[in-house]
Image (cartoon, rainbow, N blue to C red; front, side, top):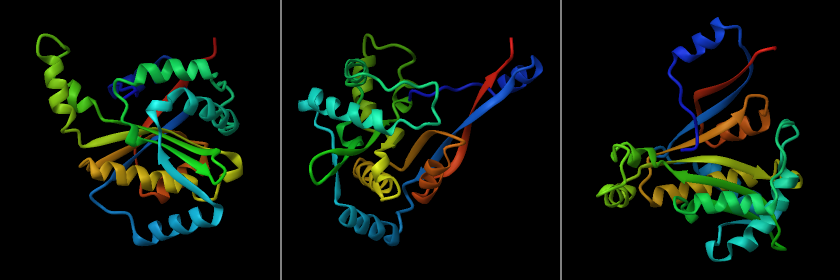
Length: 228
């Protein structure tokens, strides 16, 4: 969900017409049938106690309040490697949240908080609705909506499309804790896999954290450019 797909020949097309690689964005696959190691769980528990933070799911009932706090986190956590990205305002976050509300699963939207209640991490994941959409043949009416509700219960995976950590809490186990809590939430829903995407190839820290959580690189999204 919320990702692009292009046939393999697209790359040949861009190469042939003089486009060059600007950078790659990476996607990682998580096999949830392989449980995380006890060592990983113990290390997460120890780091949460040492650095005094907890992980919880978002409160949809207090969404406006949550977004106001999250906006400050996003502003602080926006990577310097994203020169083309500007931190969104609260109003922009609200607009995006309202678009996602019909498909969001609160169990998969996680906030890490310090003991004084300040958000120090955010993880956003969505069920893999592609499993549902491909059964609707592009139609919600007359019975497509009923089919949507039926097959929604049978989704077996999800995609984590955003994970941010306050700079003061990096390398303190926050991202690992959110991965672990997301895996646990997915397993309760019967998920067998997860997708973590996308991560800039030059974001070495996040790549390593994705791999430590058991991620396997399985897709590459290439950004092309051409001098005019």
